[in-house]
Length: 209
Image 1 (cartoon, one colour):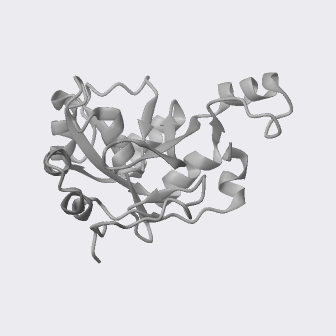
Image 2 (cartoon, rainbow, N blue to C red):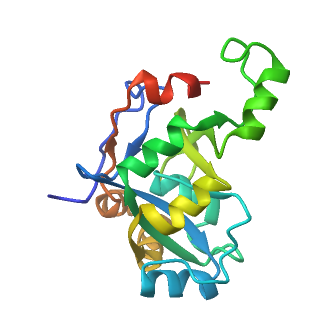
């Protein structure tokens, strides 16, 4: 299967506003994170996070490669120099969505703000929908999912869901160099192929902002 995004692919005018787009197989989905080298390199080497990785902190996983590039500045921001592609089970990803709460209050999805706060406090995962990004990291008119894991979700992520971890910092650097040189078609050709990830209303109906 070709894992590259064709140059010029994607019609922003027809993209659904809230949709998960990701590199995925029948059993796994790839998400991205960025860490300092002392955490990222051992994680990629061993296929699991080292003991210095703090389980008591919320960890955010991102199915969108370009949104991760926006967040970490193409792997240049301090403390985010190592970009990881983390392949996890679809069962784990969907468990997190099923048990997630939106990170902000949306009238209509919750009875009131107090009800939302109660749900947020007891949920092991939370969801944000942030503008997707283009190759120049400018916001697009549709949203990208960010999934925050805490407590039980963090433990499951680290110990049960991870299938493999790859260091994709060289890829991020190569694409960034092409973007800076104005070679956008060549840069787009290197992007991981992200396809719509079909999700039922049972999984995300409570998470559509």
